[in-house]
Image (cartoon, rainbow, N blue to C red; front, side, top):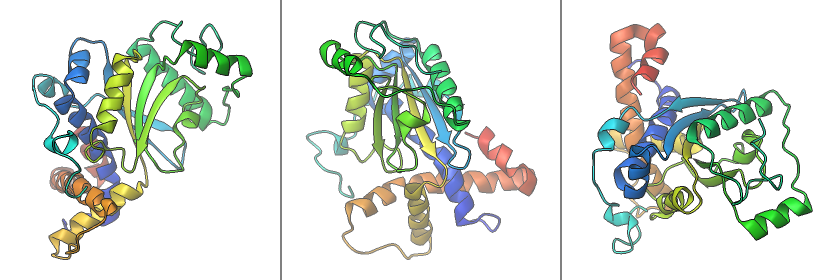
Length: 278
């Protein structure tokens, strides 16, 4: 680790790196999602939920999107049936029935993003408008089916209740969560679920959302730093250890970017420089 950065700084920046790492993975390995993004049918954007303020920082598209849209890669073997398990392992626009169902038209990506921002603003200031679903609303969701305006891949952290953070009603959001908001260790379930949401359900926006103080990213950073010092675990390892090892590349990239920014801008300019590099 560079002499000017510590583990907390690396972990904090790694949260940002990991969001775009996940977006890039989706663009690389999901042909259906890649084609929908390329044709303008779907948007994939990033965000960071700040635990202290309750606000989501929307980060936009991956800087690598244009390049990745020209790739043509299939899912890596570890995420296919053949590969088996890896070795390491405003409230939203109300629909006709008070909640979004299949009788409602699809929401354009830019409009869905506005709805997310408005909902998060209400949540952050303590003025949510979303109500409990009534019996009629629940019946409508059962009889007509779901039509979420956005798919969100977020972290499983209990402090980040995705539907609540965006002041959403049942039927608004298609939410996927795991430790570290990643899709490389889910055997294809995350990618397949997002393809289903954008294909079958017609959602036009995917948001990959990390958050501050992420335990998975902090653990991955510690794992990476230990491996640099020759202190990596020599045991067979658990599924969690496999996940942390798999995310260690994110910590490595974060450390390298922070070191580059220090050399270029000094301590005062590091935060802004690091964000510009993403």
